[in-house]
Length: 347
Image 1 (cartoon, rainbow, N blue to C red):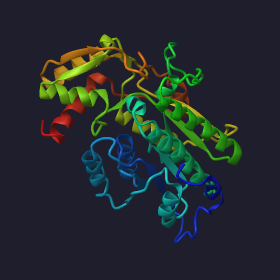
Image 2: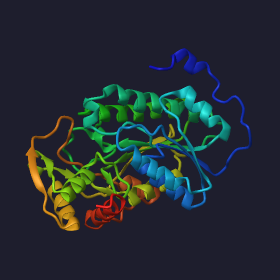
Image 3: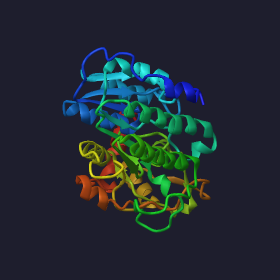
């Protein structure tokens, strides 16, 4: 660990406030990322001030991340802090000048199931140390209101009962990425119990859409099909995913942000955010073929380590708690993504 624990516990979080509290400010970590960018845009569109944090690492195309940030920079109420959440003292010092920010959307993480097989320590630093740094930031803010953080459908591991419910067992992860996300949930529960920090964890289900991540299947398939290159199809295509359009995810994040847990003891809860509908992988490929006007060349490969056959979100608790209701199926969402891809990459 990069910071000695004794030093980590002793250091005062803020030296001085250097100004008054920004009552309508939201801290968004991972602001250069796919979901973080869209959440920041939506907050800015409704008049909020956004402080974005991102280290802009090279896990995938930095130019895409910088392009997202360039769009956010056009907003007068957006400020970017280039800091590593896994370096607590660096992070806290960078945030000190903004005063106490009482609402946080924590989306920064090392993503990707397969990459965790290659670079496991990156997941411990970003997802465990980084999450702890955010928890420590929040618990020292007087009158802190709400921390909304990203979990993942991966926590359900090899569960075969569908749809996945937040009441299901999640103690059998099949990837290190999933294990770190479940660890985040447990850490958050303990901080809610110990310090009363109001928190909501969101288990995202296969998020896609414009400005999406290049390591995701929809992006990889679209890129390859347009280039006339073969796509890798695992488990002979016998895979299903609860594909969730980015606009629905953003609506869910903003909806839950304004409804912090008040009745729960401790004040911590977890919800699924998905489309509430599992779709076959082969249907996704067919939709991309239709949107691109090209036929995919498929290479079939065995199931990958750490992967699961199907995901499907039970979203009834989110519906009841904050009115979450997905509105975009892949029949509509896939053409929107392909159109964005063609425009952005001049494909």
